[in-house]
Image (cartoon, rainbow, N blue to C red; front, side, top):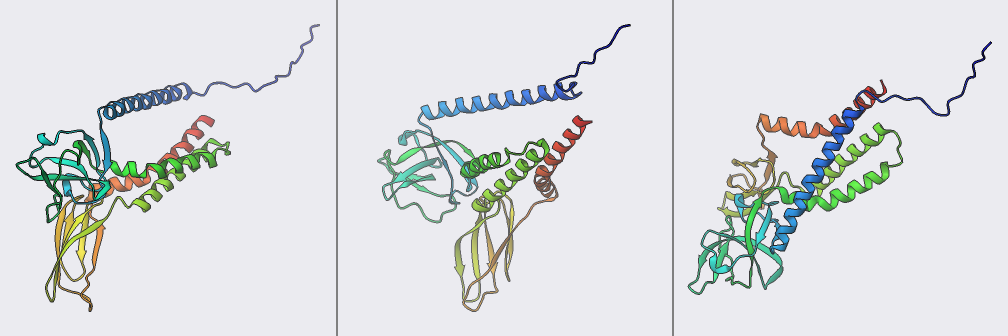
Amino acid sequence: MSQATVVPLSGTLTRPLLGEPSATRFESGIAWLVALVAALLLAGAALFLTSGGRWFVVETPSMGEAAPVGTLVLDLPVDASTLRVGDVVSFQVPANPDVTYTHRVVSIDPDGGLHTRGDVNGATDPWTLTQDNVVGAPMLLVPHLGWLFRAAPILVIGTLLIWLLTSPFTDRVTRGSLRIAGSALTVAYAAFVLKPFVNVTTITNTATPHSVTATVVSSGIFPVRVDAHGGTSVHLVDGQVGRVHIDQLTANGHYQLHSTIDLGPAGWALLIAACLVPLVLCLSIGRVQTVQSA
């Protein structure tokens, strides 16, 4: 009579999950795509810098819609003698050597001296530029991208901190959800500090004994509606200049302006969809985990 011997297994018998191979190929493809894009960006940045290029972020609304606040300016060296009236140029002046201005050339002296002015400024800049002052001419003006560069330190530090704090969690769903929520909070904090979405600056005021006409410029990403308390209102996009007339002044002659996001139905739908992205990602992580467990 034969006798069967039962040999205990030292491990757990598993089988590959149905969706695992395709998920791995997808993640691999995404990783290669990200690596390719990063390599192209690094190569482009290296070529730009070795050509003497410099980059700046516009921080004032003086150039209006041509280069709103938050525009990334990519400059290449330029010979001042090749500049013409209407060209945009970046420069520095001895009175403020730590600041780089980007304004438009409005006149040129017979000896080649350049005079500049911001598109929304009322007066020509109080200096005459020579080659020594010229930093370069914009090769590219990219609206809004400068906000990302200004937010980069907050986003990088916040992301590293979130990754460190969530590393002890072994559950994939919990760890992934906390990282998504933390990333959303980091972005919200950066937006709170930098205020890139809605901002309005008053350029000039023209006053009479009983009214004021205020010239304002939008310096935020979203279109806004500027309402004057006891006066008119105006719709502005990023960098656009408008005027509001105020008849109702306070006892000491002051007035109040109120700005709100002024999006159309499609714009509001896109904004709501963007705000729901973290929630959708968290739900997706839980759903993927449920399908794999099944």
